[in-house]
Image (cartoon, rainbow, N blue to C red; front, side, top):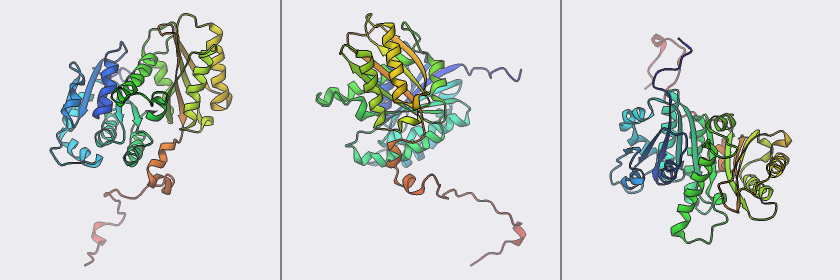
Length: 342
């Protein structure tokens, strides 16, 4: 009996935090993927209207003006019972947030820590702020470090590379398109449909390796569009991480029915020459439900560092050494020998 799973722990849960996380999750909720329950947490009631079916938790911080992530985490302590209730019964949880803003940066590390305490397999999916959003970089860097510490896997999405070909689009449509692209990429990999599917189990096996995972997308309409789209997706990864650190990857191609067998093989071979010193473990997938433009969705995993580590200046200065900021301490001497110093 000790080998049997505990009762009622068979659900896959996805939780969105703040404006960006809630909007991405609302797009995912509309797709047919293997997620049983959805939940939304935010300090803005408007974000909780993204879904009419998922659970919602409003974190009331009052009207204090600008709040910091640490302040929001402090307020969230009053909602720990509700947070644990949302996580209960789950064997796997996806946490989705945009880092840089106070809500996402404040809540996702806290909930990741709670999920870890509850023994839930935790995959955090985070979007990093645009390069021009300099004021958000510090919060994003600190939050990223804390998220990684409490997550079984961390998928990073760089807003700059996910939207690099749409910079001339009107701003009213721009942010919505970014969210749609992210949800499209994640749903294609997780879903079990398509001529050659990847699925949730293969995804989890690929990314739970104690390193960062980078999500990127490449598109092409040229003659060799599968290979070119793959190259574009890989080149985007180059700007974030050291490519030789990659150990595993998922390559999912979306095009029309003209996709040939050799195109998938050629794209995978090209991927192996560009990442992981030629020893990359690659899971393949493709679907012919797209249009004439080929889309390559890449999840590359195993990276120990990213360019975002520099967003936290203390991390760069200390080189993985930690500040002794814990209020708890250990005393070897007996209490009877302690002398009060005035």
